[in-house]
Image (cartoon, rainbow, N blue to C red; front, top):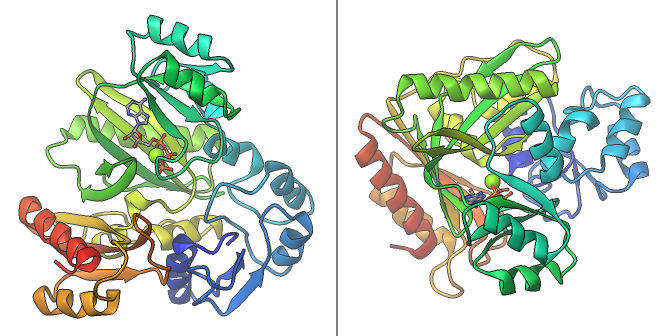
Length: 371
Ligand SMILES: Nc1ncnc2c1ncn2[C@@H]1O[C@H](COP(=O)(O)OP(=O)(O)OP(=O)(O)O)[C@@H](O)[C@H]1O
Ligand SMILES: [Mg+2]
């Protein structure tokens, strides 16, 4: 796996049970996965020579992020490396403009959008799309809400355009809530879909995932799963595809695509019969897919973000949490605590969504703040 973050760390954990050993290409020996995997190569994912050396002897190569240049992926594939998802596919998870264009071509529901180079174009778009605010997005490189700007007026648009960041602009979707549909597809073409979840974001960061999405009509859940399956097939995805969705009064709208284990699927480690990390490995290794059904009627994952500096250590917080609620499952990523940084997550399983959600939120708060 190229990239040594928490996704690689949790994929490594899943690889062990499959009798595999995950080799990791990590930028630094302190990265989440580099701290735990036995076979770690230090190097950058933009260095073709490093990628080539890294890929030697691997059964398959895949990614924990979207930042490997497609030219490098194509070069390795041409040399016979099984590398998934391929260059012509992953580009739709790397580049928001290409993603929007392709989704529009495929007839998938997308917000009104436009690529923009000048502030005047943003103002023109706002006028057509029903006024300010509009949402501007960096074409490449955004994550956790960095690279997304809610623009209130022409002055804000001008200031952003001055930074020189390549941008697209979108209408602000009047969303009721956010959903995610996660599927996996193998080179053989088998596709498996997980139950559709609700994702809750705060300040552009996912903080909670509720599985299954509470109160989602079966019809709409099937529609979301079918959309994700159709996109996985149409784009030729191998591995996981997470389709981030907006639910509106009029139906579903696609926000964006990710082609790797995704935060909206962390709940599957305990909450589904097959975790997304194992599923991703099965897919890229061309094994048959695992069962995706829920292990309990209600599953909630809550992210643990780095708390303010000072105060008790995370270890002391963990003691308190374990004493208070022995049923909570904890995953810590071995990352340096910084305010707002994703440093771990908790998962709670149960029968009743309301109480499971409260327990998960409480547990995340205990780890973050001690209370
Ligand atoms: N067109 C829109 N209308 C309303 N809200 C939006 C729109 N686009 C994005 N958002 C809000 O901003 C969040 C982040 O947007 P997006 O998923 O595009 O960015 P990202 O930084 O790539 O996210 P990620 O953390 O998933 O990588 C969304 O989850 C949603 O809450
Ligand atoms: Mg997103």
